[in-house]
Length: 202
Image (tube, rainbow, N blue to C red; front, side, top):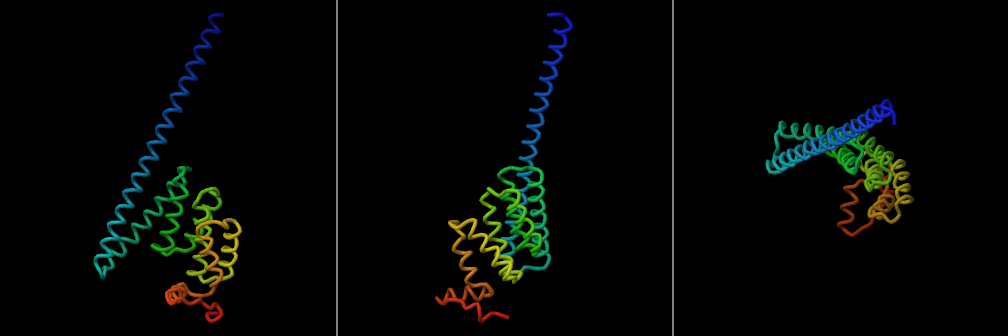
């Protein structure tokens, strides 16, 4: 083997070794970044948990505490979204669903909640949260937006896609009671009666 070939072989080996070291470095950085992001999320979740406990114990929470809790929930929702945008792993659909729930209940931004549900269904169709997101869309349209037409389409799609899902009975129940306000349904359930959707028609 000529000296020229030997030199180039050594150079190629050194180059490949450098690439390997760089790849390991990037992998370590990525893992470290994921860990740091998760730590921040867990810390924020703990903060909100403590604020919610304080809010519940106060009996008559002041405006500052209520505003602070809402702001911190918005921060957590943003952190969930940022994590999903940066990391495509098993946590991503879970965090997106958590964010959707925060927008639905804690922040009162139903459009954002629906958009995140759509994102889960589109980007993580095999995730367990895809079914939850589809059902939740139906719930939002039926019980919060009061769009019975959209709710009917979504619940029907849910039953077609997930006929044996734990929420299948719930989806059928919602279909059977389209147009009946959720609080009225709960009252009738407590009385052992069935709802009559026609009595709530506009």
